[in-house]
Amino acid sequence: MPDYRSDSVPADLDGLVTLAHVIYALHAFAVISGIVGSATVIGSFVASLPSILAVVLNYMKRSAVRGTWLESHFRWQIRTFWFALLWILVAAGMVFTLIGIPFALVLIGGATLWIIYRVIRGWLNLLDRSVMPMPEA
Image (cartoon, rainbow, N blue to C red; front, side, top):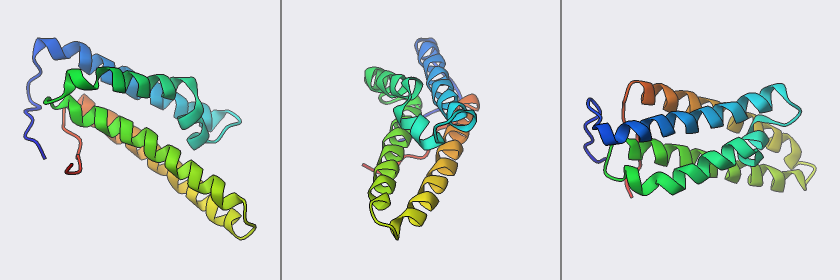
C-alpha cells in the first residue's frame, strides 16, 4: 500500500476533500432513498441519479487525487459502486431459476449491508483523514 501522509492536507486538496464528502453524501442519500422508498438499497445505490453522479465525479477527479491519501477514498467509492452493480446483476441472474430466488434475496440483503458498511466506514475514515485500505494493483 502506498505510504500517504494523512495527517496533513495541502491547501490545494481542501476542495477535493470537500468533493469526497459530497460524493459520500450522494451515496448516503441513495442508500437512504432505498431504505425509505419503494426501491431496494442496492437498486437505489446503482441506479439512482445521486450515485451515478457520485461515480461520474469520482472518475472526473480521480487524476487530481492520484498520489495523495484521497486516492484511496476515490478508489473505495468507485469499487463500492461497481461491486454493488456486480452483486445486483448476479442476483438478477439467480432470479431466473426458481431455486435461485432465495439465494438472490440473501445476496441482495448481504449486498445491502455491505453497501451501508462501505459508505459509513469510508465517510468516517474521511472525517478522520485516514487512508482506506487498497488492494495491490
